[in-house]
Length: 230
Image (tube, rainbow, N blue to C red; front, side):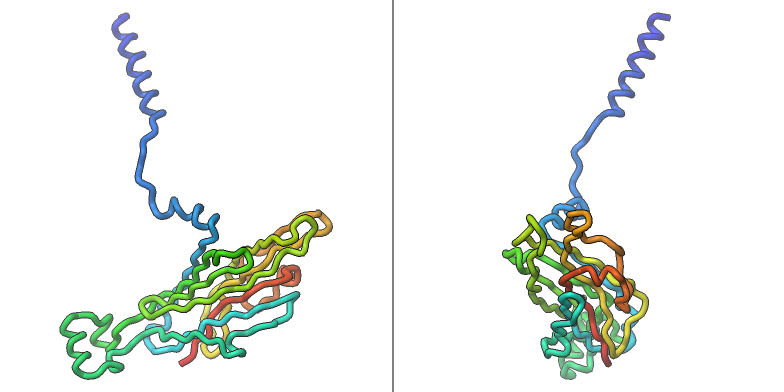
């Protein structure tokens, strides 16, 4: 009987010890995401596979607002970044088309598509100065372009000279062909005088008609999006 209780106690101790073990495992890419975000790196991606049956020109557009007023529009002011959503085999000389087909390098030979983008991504990175933020706009398999956003310091007691911005998406449903489709808002924090704090709160995502009352509180923001045209 004593032997039985001894073995039972030993077994319970052994099981309890195993339950408290910790083991080293390999970190995944997702484990690095909080560190990258804290360092100022963020990436947002959008599905544009609905455009795959035709060739479109995608223009990345940045609009800047100060106190609710539009002060800069890259489409209006001719700062244009235009990339096609696909490249057709017919755009190559006949001998190159034959080589591409022979090497099976085309996305869809039957439809004559050489490369196709089903996704666009917009990434943000620090620019080496608090007053700047780098933006990289990528059309999958097609190309990319970049620019820098000039930020403004906070106008708040005790925070003079500090920069604080957040990034929020717009709600997505359809692409406005021939018109501007907003994708992301890069907005500055503001001073809440009633509570004596600097904050950026409100919706987690904005309506595309920009009717949100929160936009009236943000002193400086950029709206980044695309204009898709045939």
